[in-house]
Image (cartoon, rainbow, N blue to C red):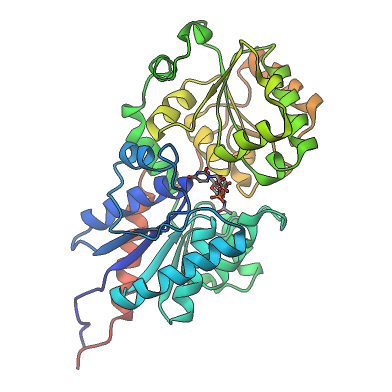
Length: 384
Ligand code: UD1
């Protein structure tokens, strides 16, 4: 008995900035697989600003999506519902072999939910990460997406325990490594030097002339939507700026709230350079050369571990524990005293050295594609 040899396209979904660096290496691995695996890329339009979108696509060499659902912003319910409504007819038209989603944004869950209800297999890349914090929208997206996925690829071994504890069959899970690190390693030689990035955004590069600086990113709703929390964090940043210059590419949500709550003056400081959201290669250049990253991003905790750059995470928890256990990450929450102590330690000693976790080696996407190809083959109807 043989299997029919033609696999229908894998319908791949991106929606928001952190999806792009995860999807780019997967699509390249589909093309490089022998035989190539057909794919179709759809962008839901969750992120639409030029800075959040096209510049990232070009920096990552991510192909232009064949479809853009242009959903834009909205409440979680509106955004999720709108993605579902617009994604469903596409699944009907394309009749994919499976829907492949990455990460934990609203687009991830919305498209997984459409697929499972239509009996189309769901494949989740970056499965099993858990912060234990259900107030985080991403945590809900992770739990639900994993629960309805048919094939799950993990970035660290602890993710399998999380999945099994929630009732996922261990045989559906494969430890493949971290696709975001595939992007990082392949793009590192192309990273834009920090002085050039500053120049392009009208900032005098003498700010970082002594080679020491921190890069800051903040956008979690729990940090930037609550005025008291945002005030606390901006005050912590002003304190950090007494020790070293800060480069702060601001997410649109954060910029809007800083203006709305009237905290702009706290950041009016010659040692703090405010930048728009940056392209991937610009951000990579800033991160690779940074003395320390100060962030609430999930992805940056991983990227700094891979780059051996110290990272202070302004959150109470992390869904990526390996970055703190093995890597360069320290979860400091909004504890100002701890933050300052860690910062001083980094400035005095270089901070945590860390090591690069297993399978964060630049070859996660080919491992996923090899496994997925075999799995899709095994699901093809057998020839008589
Ligand atoms: C989303 C993801 C988050 C991810 C982040 C990366 C969810 C639940 N959250 O959060 O996990 O870390 O992307 O950036 O999916 N906006 C713009 N232009 C844009 C996009 C957004 O101005 O291109 C503004 C809008 O005012 C919007 C707000 O930012 O309401 C939030 O955008 P949204 O996509 O809802 O969530 P993020 O905070 O970006």
